[in-house]
Length: 222
Length: 126
Image 1: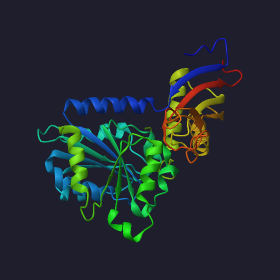
Image 2: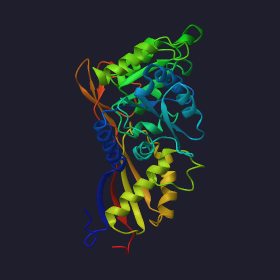
Image 3: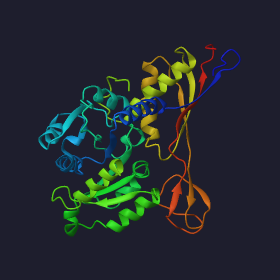
């Protein structure tokens, strides 16, 4: 790799994400071995990730466990526990994303051996850029976009929206009050990612949540 | 990710990536030496802000014992196939459709790359 005796320039050619990708592959293998299907939820702050997860916790109960990523506080994990699921909070202490090593470490603290457990949902730190390059070992990457954020966000954050498997448009109950064009959002997301699956919901009113949870359930029980 | 005292003040992932870069360089060289230049490639879908990365890397390289190398960033374009007219084209941003037919229906086939390509050692460090 390095022939420094004869020249000053040393070839390295290494992906900067390679270490993270290695941990991600380990996580994926570990979770597969336990029969657990894994989601990575990514969105901006305030788009409703935790409310979506509370609704999922009521649907899946002890079949689901949650890892919460936040810069500070256990508040989100407490909300999920109240809704009926095991939750572990990662406080990143300033970092703007989760990486595969942090998820591996979180899993060490969780009880993932229960026979009931089929699904692990990881709520990433609210951010549309930084989490996009970090594979956590998930099977399905879900991008949330909420109606108040505007329908123009997708092409502004192509690194995320080109990498998701599912786009969940949340806060659909606010659609009558805002100028969000659902068709435009879908068209622009497909322009980055022709295979993306789009679902719409309001985690607050519950509209569309049974369909969303049913879709997730079909991914691992189908 | 290597924690760093700056982490709390600069919540940007470019800081942890700068640490990863110095770790990769250190392990490829087997030692810490002052560098003249670090050559990297960054794709438009890597989620990296080249200027933030430059800012963080300059600081981290110094602290980690690699001197004050110039960071040379090769910013690539994404390779894209138009799903309407089948031509292949390249783009740095994604607002414009196919240069031939204008269609936004497309498949992006590259653009996430982020690699440390090579380093150039300071005179006297060989």
